[in-house]
Image 1 (cartoon, rainbow, N blue to C red):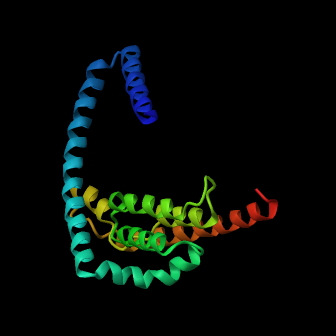
Image 2 (cartoon, rainbow, N blue to C red):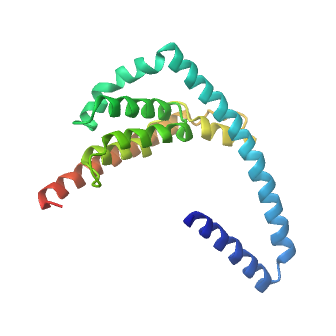
Length: 191
């Protein structure tokens, strides 16, 4: 609901500014061009998302997802200690999807993991660390970014892999360090 208000406000503001500056024809042409590009990008992203979602289903049916979850369990236990096995399983599935760059497919798994971690209305340290892990995830295959680059005409959409690995690892380390430090501050103050 709030997001639709923001988008409507931005659209109204653009129209008012175009009228005030006398650039209504250029603004209308830019709006139509932007809408066309948006639909084209959405279709190309839908294709890659369908491909990798299908690959995830095959991995799940073949048992590969369970093996990845088993490999991730020691790390996730340290980050989300005290959580139920069901929450750990959902968290591992979320991290696996994020490793493949499937942020949209990983979101429902992350929501399910947080629901299973929830005890009351207060966010626990484990929940906060998991949200950081989910948000600043390391991506081995940034499929969504590659799809956007491919739609924009990049000759080699995956040539950004080293930069993605480095920046996502740095962002994850910084996020987890901040979550740990803030958790310590909050626990000392009794908040």
